[in-house]
Length: 112
Length: 112
Image (tube, rainbow over all chains, first blue to last red; front, side, top):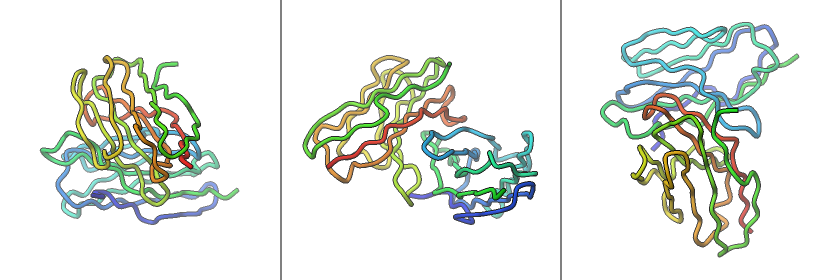
């Protein structure tokens, strides 16, 4: 029952460039969250955007949400080697706040 | 350091053996979760506990049982391990249900 689907599945960019990942989902949501997972580690919560918000910033991260298109994007500006990781979007469905549903993730590789 | 602690980090079981994965959080969170992560499948929810004293099935509960021992601890038990349960298991907690999870570092389980 995959709710969020990230695109692309994998992305390689040069250090210093911006990285953009997209997430599409199927049903109305309460909020959408982005997580990062470094190899062999647990997921780390990056940012949460509510359904009534359109854009949110946190440091080098910028998240947008378009509920009409049921999509979100995560932009990482001025990428660094330490940004190499997998990034997951996760959704909390409207009126179904019992659990978060994760997508399969985007693998981001920052090239030196 | 405050967070979610999982034990053990690695485990090899023979088919049919049983074991319990332990999870403890020290953030006074109400909600706790168990996920499994398999290549190409993202994270799938096994069981969750919205609050102390309650547990509910997630997406893939078959073959597992859980116990919410107290507010801090949420254990996952495999009664008769099968090779299909080879996976990385993550415990997570949340102060408010579905408002950002804190993950443990995972248990890598191999069933032979």
